[in-house]
Amino acid sequence: MKNAIHDLISKLDLKPHPEGGFFKETYRSKGVIDESHLGASYTGKRNYSTCIYFLLTSDNFSAFHRIKQDEIWHFYDGSPIDLHVISESGVYHKHVIGIDIKNGEVPQFVVPGGSWFAAEAINQNAYALIGCTVSPGFSFEDFELKSRDDLISLFPDHKEIISRLTHF
Ligand code: GUN
Image (tube, rainbow, N blue to C red):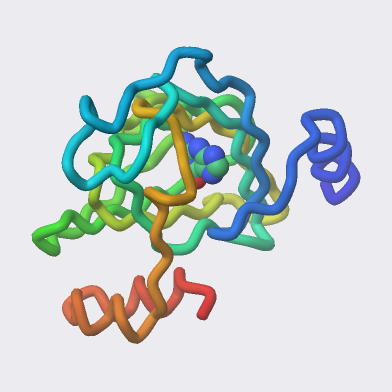
């Protein structure tokens, strides 16, 4: 499995992501939305839309983070993923992203902008390859990772899952 993962990372030219896992941007629209047409929380202009490959393995996870825009997840291959979402008002839900539809997995899921989310491959010795699409296009200006302690003080009811799925 380690070799298969190494091959995927190399063939798709994936790089480590600050939240964990590996990614490669595959699309960034040429069109640009001016700051005056974006919500007040955006600083600067943004491309209409962007898309990435995102790879998780059993040895890593995507730590709790948030972005301003809704993020559409598309399942491509490998292990199903547990996607943990805490809404801005503190409501927690787990969604299983995968292709086993009859058992409740969903191949597509939209994470609402502003919610905190983390993800992990469910199977051992495995990888999960997905796509993530956002509009307005992605900018690290709209991306926020918080520390374990800060997130626990915001959402004390979810201490256990936050402790497990944060890096610092
Ligand atoms: N580009 C770089 N990082 C990300 C990310 O976390 N999500 C999306 N959609 N695009 C990105």
